[in-house]
Image 1 (tube, rainbow over the protein chains, first blue to last red):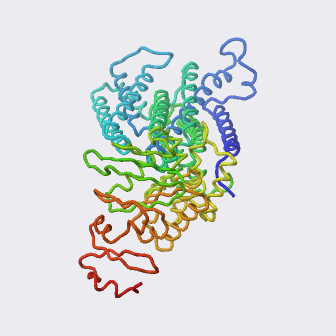
Image 2: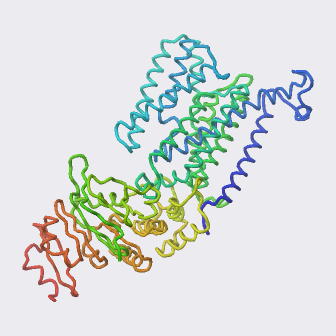
Image 3: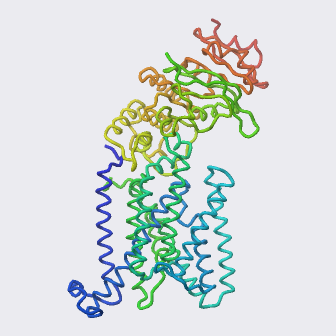
Length: 343
Length: 274
């Protein structure tokens, strides 16, 4: 009789979840406007490019997109877990410290000024989003620390105010921009997953996975931190080091995710809560399982976004909000953590 | 017996407000020390200084002969465990998970507990009689049960010193006595050094070996019967206090201006003279 997490238990659960993720990814690769047959895909690429259309669609169009959705979903969910723990606020999400508005501001400035240079295959929009996000997080962190050393409330306040201010600036810039510029900005703000070329995918995969692994190593400290900072220090935890590490990595992977896909809401808020409701609050489990379910959720949502109004495509952010909200409310209302089948 | 905690000429101030000045005392290993005194006298501050959360403005605190400042946060957490007055559990951790966190200062990089850790936790749960509700979420417990859980956690932290900040302040009589009995048991059976801040001087006097009575600008340290005297209590708390003898022990009752028994003549008549 014990519900304490062990390495064995965790490994077992993570493997099960990964299997589910793999299955969902395969399935979502096969679903789409264009029907493709598995037989043809397994026949290989063929001698000349374009000979096997089914293979081309799967490998160069759908697979990268599914992988991208999985990466972004994992990053947002992890970041949500960490920020909720550090800020000790169940309402925290990856965007709470100003990342969204910072990235948005970066993007709209890039679009309006019409920059066109690229970097490592990343589009100017992605780079502007990343830069905007990182600068804003730094700004919020800096302001939060000017007001008081270990006050998370100040940090939250600084984040909220910077968010509101930047949102106003975004509105201002949108209202003076040309209409086609406005259109691409709004599409970006709604969150949108599109095909990216392999080098971009590789670099982001490495960044996000490195972030998740580093964050996993602070998880046991996050457990203690949920009881407050004094308590955590009493348990031998270096609060400042832990906070900087956790905030830094969470901000970084969120910025990477945002620069890839725009502002996809809800994943970072509801996935950690859903996993916590079912499996309990131990962060050593919450983080990896949330990462995997964040991936599953976003892969599924993006597949829906691809097919629901085909041949047109919806921004995936709309799907995550429309599907995620009610799903979460049902979970919240119906579940307690006394789910015995996994414990 | 050697001193496990040595406080020498300690002073501390929040900005310009001096809280502690020139405070010196020793705590012998295996001793039960109670810290009493009016609100704002710096009792909690003193605990925070001992556990390294605050840095002294002057003087020094030594644990096991070494200055607190020279310990790493992790090493200090292996010396002293703290049970605090207030806590805010944001997420629904169970009792067992909470107590298991006591092992945090002993964990490696990814932070997983070993079998040995699990055994230590089981013993702590048993000693504090919290194993009955080990699987319940912390939020579903009563105040008394929750306080025992945090004492269990401090116990599982396996430190020679336990620091407690008003462990009985929100508890009824039965649970107050229960907590003090538990602390005494830990002192006697496990050899723990216990430092507890309390407002209940009558209860504390029955259990502790030494008392630190901390006033705004004075302090008394010594055996309960030498420190808890009408004169010194009145001076420290700034309120009228009556002493009552019962079973060879002195008990103290504060009395305000409009209290029913506000004259010295009334008090003794209500209680047997010894």
